[in-house]
Image (cartoon, rainbow, N blue to C red; front, side, top):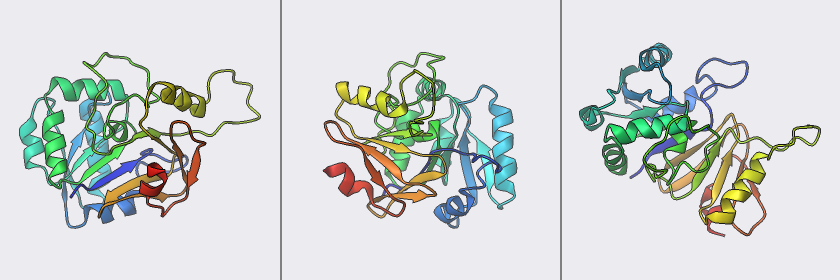
Length: 232
């Protein structure tokens, strides 16, 4: 039974790290009080791990930073948290450490997976719908495939008052669908997806926006199971 909690973001404007989602994170973890953290999306792994350790220590949860080449840590984990940062760097480090198969297998066997931003991106079939700059070159774009759809974290709605002439997020996702069939879930900040008990449920403060090739985007409010919207 796959159990995932996929956050759009780890910090909401005006609040501390994970404050907006910590109640849900703790409910998701249940009795688990030890967490393996994957810090590879940022350059300074030690500082990133220390930040996460400090935040979870306040909740009585111990955090162990994952060694870049230690699949044994994944095998021993009670739950895993893949943090945000640069998605290309994260995927590159996971590939080089040979960690993708171990994480995929353990999560497929029931290991709870918590992801935020880049950690949410790598839960998808590929990282093709990330917002990040490719600061490194991974071997490919294929990721963990823990869900059968793509996610665009930090999804931003078009601002009709803006003078910015670049593509909106919606236009970029439409470009993705010019070349790909896979549905995309635009996940606004302050929201997340909870995958468990056979459901893909939108939760948090704001609705998600679902994009399917050849169809108009659809707003999906919190509390909704995505399966119906993605199957149309």
